[in-house]
Image (cartoon, rainbow, N blue to C red; front, top):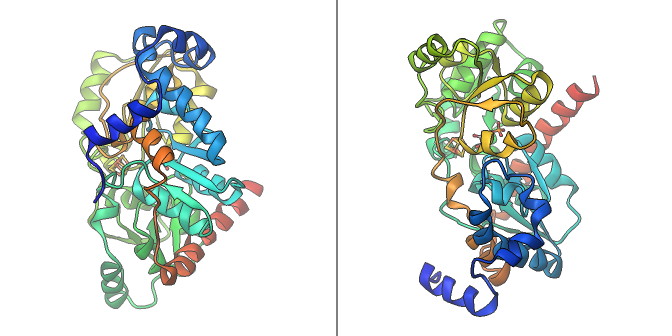
Length: 352
Ligand code: 13P
Ligand code: SF4
């Protein structure tokens, strides 16, 4: 049985100096400078002792931290070795030399790192950090789709369990879904589990018939086209940037749609005076200091799963080494084939 949070806290406090400290905040001023616009110094004084302890422990354990763009700023800027969208993190996982990976993201991301590095320890700071999309489909669901549509290739979003990846022909992420669907043979493609991503891809690839599964991201499906129209009427000088997990009518209201890395690139290139990021809240926080000239406005939604990853849980996972992700050996090879096919098709696109 895993220890309770009070027990974990007591163990960590016995082993490290974790009290809020202005001295620790001063010692990590360079890190705080990357998020000073969104994290006040008094808050940083709470985070800095954890950041110092984690960064020391990373060295002792030979660990790298792979962090998704939806992590909070103190994780994203304070302890991550690599940050990125799902595709960038999967590619980074193929290049890791360290024996230990700490996945700051959700469970399917840690599974992807494990699939690509079966011999390494992949630590998941909170095993409960799931994803509404990954929960929406099982390998039996894929079999059912194949039975209903024989011979049609199955593309599964990386936001799926290892077993679903293993049952699929190829994976995709929000940054390469269009290219992957175009690259597949035949005029029909099954896309699982995100119906919104599938509908957004279908609009961009009209030459293919796309059959989708009925899954959705609970964070992105809460945005409505009406919200965006009202916002634009009220603040017409705002550039609206949406993630493709949003419903198609929301995407239609946006000035740009892209993966989380695509959104970061777009803001860096376009430098809009005012930007509304129609996605998870930490996105704007993580890039606010890099773009002091951009005002980030408007509603955002929190992912309750991503927010389960905290500095305290990262420290515990590295301290105890008791939270490794495991993937059944018979699942690893076929799941890896689906992920590697995706990476190969994506690299072919980048090299072109
Ligand atoms: P990307 O970072 O690949 O755009 O994915 C967003 C997401 O919701 C991951 O869970
Ligand atoms: Fe899953 Fe949506 Fe959270 Fe991403 S933002 S982890 S897709 S629930």
